[in-house]
Length: 69
Image (cartoon, rainbow, N blue to C red; front, side, top):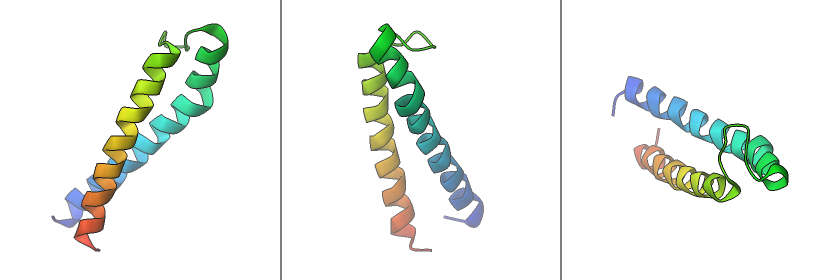
């Protein structure tokens, strides 16, 4: 992996973490009280997206750890 690919993965990791933060801090709370988020997602849909994103983050972190830079 070259430096450009590494930087892309670091950037992607930051975007995934920010998306989870948004889901947990805003959408989850809104859906919990209203029954749906600002985007129209239900609480269950938000929980599912958070789970999927956490798996993606773990895979990406593993890839970055394996590089050992």
